[in-house]
Image (cartoon, rainbow, N blue to C red; front, side):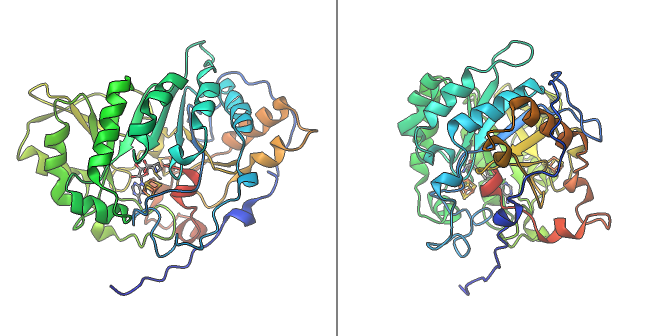
Length: 373
Ligand code: SAM
Ligand code: SF4
Ligand code: SF4
């Protein structure tokens, strides 16, 4: 196969600048809305930019090769720094925290971070909805210790059941049996509910849709089909490789009767459908064909402490600079977070392909492995 050459625009260093924002303290009220009235509820934290897989839609080998400059350890937020920020986000109304990456289970002693986050309480005094997205390569080994540390549930990414297709997609020859063993270990450890995410690429793994549905029916695990997205700038995304969720559903409908379900939470990304025979549910995450920016309540914290307001953003806000400045207090950082969120206008998926999309959003998007999915 001819080698693809895709320039990697390294946006990381260019963005490392203190947010040009007032540092007047703001006492968090438990609610902060953006310029479109969307409240901050969900925080995704990338704990590492490294991964042991090279899924072509996320970290293509040609770009993320042996010489790729991953972040040195000192650049990463420490667990104490992550927890300090998480506390402030929770005080602003965040109820859900998802750890992601890269591959979050590669971060050393991740259980310690989970313990620290599990101790936080929402503004209503309830435990956080604390979860993690993983490729499950290390899950068989870690499910029990993650549960013991206070993780409640887990989302596993799995794109095929066929071993050859799966090995091709992860591009490091990783066997599907080990991922399935990870899912079983998570079930045995009591991590629940478990979700499985399948990115569907037309012509690559769409033949796996029905086998995947058949496998996870009646298992208590919700399978979610994700439209292949144009995140980052390196995956060579093409619209003709996107299989719209409507088509995925039509393929399923040839085998199973499905009924739509109501959304279980505002801002939920997946449209949920139930098997009419009671065998559980499936979800569809249709960020390409059915944008859900209207109630997007998600903030993203990169591995080195940049706050991103959208998965498709081209720049972040350097909260680490504030954390590491001994003269800046928690109340000042809380004020900065509130002000950054207040002016948020992002709605990339709604504007995709439209003229109003700022040119930099077309060309300079941050990689998903860096800010997390
Ligand atoms: N390594 C972990 C994993 O794969 O679960 C966590 C990080 S990964 C970036 C988070 C999620 O993003 C995964 O479910 C992955 O399938 C999804 N993802 C990555 N690139 C994508 C793309 N181009 N389109 C749709 N989903 C994508
Ligand atoms: Fe790694 Fe997850 Fe990206 Fe695949 S999707 S390369 S497992 S970070
Ligand atoms: Fe949220 Fe941005 Fe995705 Fe829209 S495109 S749903 S604003 S992350």
